[in-house]
Length: 476
Image (cartoon, rainbow, N blue to C red; front, side, top):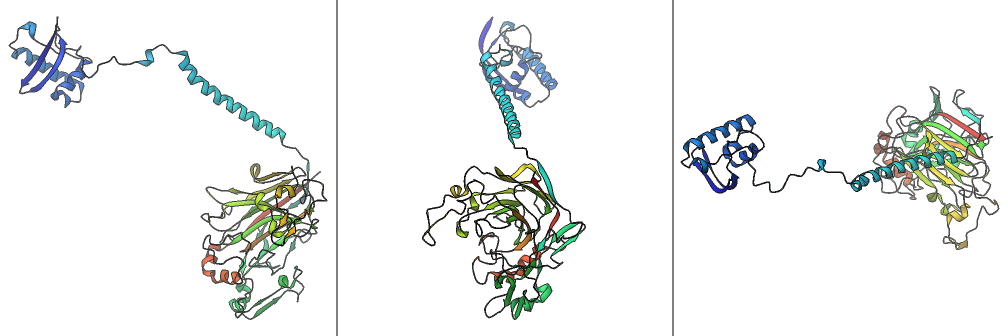
């Protein structure tokens, strides 16, 4: 028999009242799921954490309620294991017991099938791409390991004061202080000119004339003679370095080159592994092209334009020096957790009449790629008229009748470490640069900040570009 009652508990040990709807049941609650619901209703049980203690409180309640009640037995109320909390008004959902809807299963399986299919398609594309890479036969033509020192049959040390057309601040020498072989590796080391001539000679009253001993490899007075004059704010090149070239001794047209090297560390150092045309068939730079296999900066990782953690590859080409299209054919590779000065890396070039690309260590780590699928004059998209001199822009490669020119001729190798430049490689206003490009005092301003940049070069060989080997192959 069911009844709806107002149950009030006003005993000192159980102060509780609530409106509930229950059924008269034959026995008091002992245990079960209703125990937790009952515990929520009785404060004394809410303060009890363990189940055994809750049962003890429950038995005490039932016993005291039975003894003290003045109601007839049929009106007495017992809380049993079947007590149901008012807080739960709906049946408890148990979806794991429901019958599976095929549509729900399909919703789960179809995305997984799509992912698997995507992996399969991706794997096929990678395989197809690998099979589609042209396979060429390359024959070795150069294997320089420096076992014979700096071989004069392969390399020439350039001696030049002129900055090589980019306003560099170094004087390249034939001194063993700047280029030498140690422990089977080539070192190209920048040093201060003051270490050789003294500080006073660098800033005032000294003349360097490389024509006197015939050592100059340049062809102009600016490349062979330098004067320091404090009144005119001119100084000698403040740094000496080295530049090795294979011109007239080794060159190649199409093939593969690999140079294993460690790059130098230090602000405003500019290491480069690159190539220039042997005969400049199409005219002066950049008409006949330039191939930069790997070049970088010695500045720290925080340098915004890319410090020693970035290596870039570039092709230079154009109808004039002011219309260089290099920005269309340039790319870099960044080390995110280290840099290129801590260990040796292999810098590679593969070059055919169909494509050219550069890489680091292996072909999977590609830096730059270009397919020769259109003429370079078309690629440049220059205007018809040169705005600087109001003349028509002529196509220097019109007679080549191919898409490769100017990169269809013999190129020779260059290894060097430059210092500074007024050509824009170190942008103005970036990284506390101490000079401004194009100013008459750029070189002097750079040297005036010696105490800032020279300590970053460190001691020992960290300032050196260290070359372990140079290897080259031509198409057989």
